Image 1: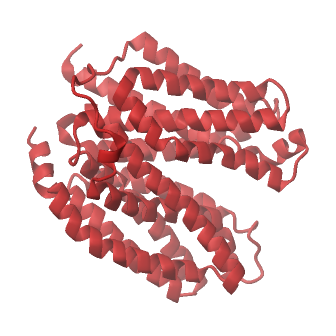
Image 2: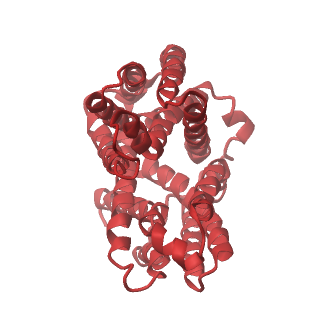
Length: 398
């Protein structure tokens, strides 16, 4: 097999993994009513089931990076995909909420392992030094997988509730079979030992990129969770349930934003995209804080969702310039952990401020302050620490 084809097969395989991860993340929301009936629980009980995967996935980001750098991409992918498959097949065995919650925690461990490892896989095989572009495509296909979950699950609910879990389980099993059939072994592990976590944590650019990513991913998750209620504040006479289509729009825009970010990196450097997106996002935060018009509110929210996602590849291209190849997964996991932490904290922030002030808009005011401070700090430190412009030009010349 020619080298170019050899690389392309791996990139396409990574995208297939991203699609499967997206389906795994969103297989529960399309079937909430049916699962509440199957498990005989209220919204509180079903929220525990939904969040179980999210918490374990977030907490696995740093351990996943350490494992991938220590044991290699091939072994870690096999482990992660196997855990996801088992985590989805087990709850299909019987209608038991405790089993389902434990299985979702188990699944989140697998998605954490697989997501970070696949990001390193993409970075290792991205052709022509275009790491950021292909990372953007990978993240965009993950979002397409979220939408695919809604499409597939909603069409098999009439057959049996087990298909809610069987669809992502079978998806991951097919990925495992393809891996073994195609013999997609990653490059040999480097002879040098990966950097310890303490040394990774001392990389200033990692903290800045994590903060940037937290602002971006936290915005998407906060809008996805709260935009129906946010719109209901302005569109009087409408309920959050009636405005749930706003969350679906955010999901669609986020996927398009990540994919478009890959093409934007063909024209602009990762440093420009990273800093520029945070600057624009800060302006949008202030706009959402100060402009209560319903139509303008939705337009600004969707624009914020797009800007928050087009920078994904830029962040991880920059991250790849500040550490050795044998420690990439650990740094990727570190940045992802900070992003997921921000998503949780910002979601809680909006809920608390709504209870305290009666409106969500103060949350955007606080994000505007954080965004401005992050931009002022990051625009100077990233240029100094990453040397991103020169690194980017050198990588393009490879």
